[in-house]
Image 1 (cartoon, helix red, strand yellow):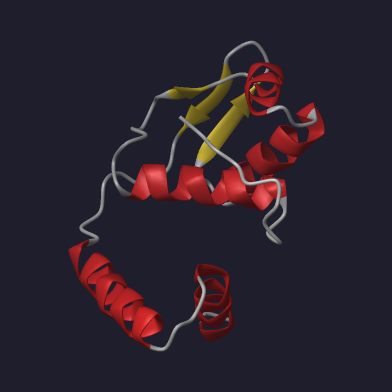
Image 2: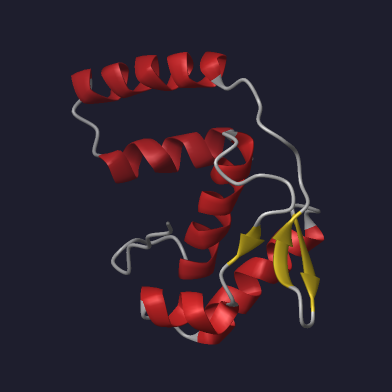
Length: 116
């Protein structure tokens, strides 16, 4: 379900947070759905359990998940959103970035900077 890139400049916990955000926004993670236990996910991704816990805490602070002892981590955030306009804009951005011979990392950096 989740993948991380250890060679990326983006911290591992932020990669996990981003994947959950997208999963919720696209409706792949539904309200009430339980996420894997932190220890289980850390083992599956071969990362420290504190990395997963930090991601889960960020998501909790954003209101996307609820952390309950004994219940685990449950999606509580927004339901599926229409991302078609964003997906069209991204397709155009990708075409332009490729035409300019920008790497995916350089393109991502430009997007992150523009969103600050």
